[in-house]
Length: 298
Ligand SMILES: [Zn+2]
Image (tube, rainbow, N blue to C red):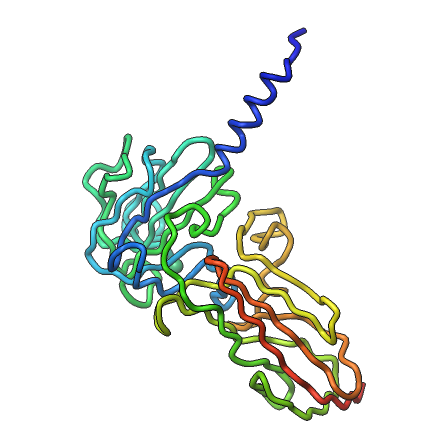
């Protein structure tokens, strides 16, 4: 029987750690790095009924490069036969970077002429566009580990981009039988609750200015000084129960429509302070307080 020496074991562990820290290049650069513009949608956002598992960059007819060396795993035109039409991704390319790492590129206007074989991080694999289910020309791309079973936040493995704005918690929302009631932060609200309604938040993360998105990375919240929950938008995993955030949370428990769902909170009669901490990938932090004078009727 072969015995592993401690030295061999250390080597194996080191290789595993390195495989987990892959670095990639941006597939498409709008503006000058690191002041990347044109990111219109980020990882982990709500898409009404599912998580957005990649990054969107507004773009039309721009060359799209592979984010690293690899080989073409799959490519197809939306109209290819004999497959049924693919309504979602449109023309797409998926590149295999080894050790289970994949990257994917959707809505391409044109695919590169060569659709098999090796690529480098300088190979143009197609041109951005608006094919498939896409409400405006953009490149959607994803980075996955574990042979497509774990989508990760591309910002974790791409060169850093400028992000000077902390996430903004815009409003707290209760959806009741009467509709949507919206409460603004930093001032006191008197409300009567007839039921234990879940609490929702509207949060956005501007990057360079209002229109450039970077994305919420971590969200945590406390009520009257007691921590109630937290989430990290780092990975979305394929499981027998479907796609789950951090391998545990189904879409419905994280979002309602476009709003973060914090669930039912243990409000007390009288004054309540709900404190929300939001962090973006660059580490910008915002802390937002909602002061609620509550009359509980349940
Ligand atoms: Zn997208």
